[in-house]
Image (cartoon, rainbow, N blue to C red; front, side):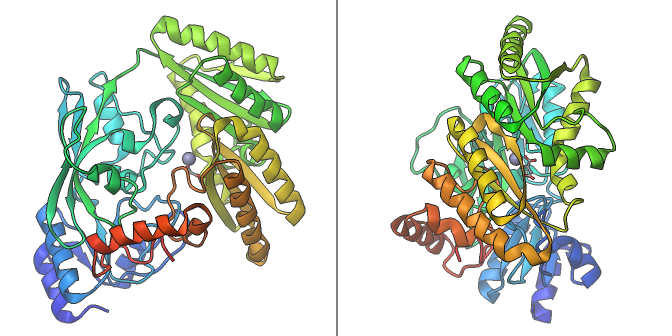
Length: 455
Ligand code: MLT
Ligand code: ZN
C-alpha cells in the first residue's frame, strides 16, 4: 500500500487528474490479453520524460514497484501488476514528434498506437513494417518492451530491427539516450538492443527513434485453402524453397478458422481444414511474378481453392479473419493457454505433427495458427478450469519438442509471468545468472516490473 504522503507526491508529479486510486479506475489497468489480473495500488499517467523519472526516483526512495504499461494487449502478463505498486501508464505520451523523409526515420513517444504510425507514414510513401495483430490498439512503447513481431516479420523482421535509438528512464531514475539517428553506430555496448524486449524490467522508453523504409509499390494478397494441415505446412515450406520471401505467410488450422468464422459470422473458408494467407510486395512486376510462383506452389500442394484479393476491401476482409483469431478463440472455451513457440521454419510440419500427438495423448483441443513463414506458431490450448493440470503438462511437452528442434519457447510474446517457470528449459544456469546480474546492476532495488521473466 502507498502512504498518503506518497500519494500526495505522485499527485504533485502528474497532477491530481492523472493519478488514479479508486478501484473503478484501477481495474482498467489490472489485466492484459492473458486475462491474468491484479489490482495496482495506484495508476500514474505521466505526460513527460521528467515526470516518468520523478516517479521512478520516488519509487526508489519509498520502495514501491513501478509497472510500465502501454495498451495492455500483451500476451505473457508483462504489464500485470502482480506485486501491486504503481502502474505507469504511458497513454498520454502519444505524440509522433518527427517524421524525417531524408533520414528515413520517425521519432515517437511510447504511447503512439502502432496502426496510427503505420497510417501516418504510409500517407507519405513510407513504411513501418512491424505489424502485430493488435496494431489498431497496441502501442509502440509496448512493442518495444516486448520486441513485438507480427505478420510481416518473415520478410521484414521484428521491432528490434527498426529501433535505432531510445531515450530511456533507468530503474534508478537517470535519463539516458541510447543508439543514434544513423543507420549504423557501434559506440559502446548496444544498450538499445538490451532495452528492446526487456519487458519493462530494465528501463522505461520515453522516446523512440524508428527506422522507416520506402513504401512498396505493390502488395498482392492470396488466401489458399487446404483439405489438411500437412498440405498447408508443406506449401509454406515450398514457397520459401521456391526462393520467394513473402511479406506475410500465415497458417491457420481448422479450429482457429472455425472460431474466427463463428466470431465474425462469416464463412470464408468453405469448411476447409487449413488456410494459408500469403502476401507478397515489391514493384508491380516483381510482386506479380512472385504471386505466380506462389500460386503454382499452393496448387501443387493440393490447395482446394485460392482467392486473390482484387481490391483493398477484399484484402482487409482476409486480414480481418486472421487478426480476429486471438479474441475469437476466447469464445469457444473459458481459458486458453496461448504459447508462441518458434522453430526453424523447415521444422513447421514436424512441430505441428508433434503438437497433434500431444493433443491426442492428453485429449486436449489445441488450436494452431500463426506466422509459419518465420516458424512462429501460436499454440492455443483451449480448456475449462478442470483441464488446467493436464494442459500444463502439455505446455511443457510442447516446449520440450520445440527445444529439441532447435527452436525457442517465445518468438514474440515475451516471458512475462506466463513463461517464467519454463525459461530455465531454454536458458542455461550460467546465462540466467548473467541476465539476473544485468537486472541487479541496473535496478538494485528491484523497482521496475518486479516478478517478471525470472521466478
Ligand atoms: C497474433 O499473431 O495474432 C498474436 O500474436 C496474438 C496471438 O498469439 O493470439
Ligand atoms: Zn503473433
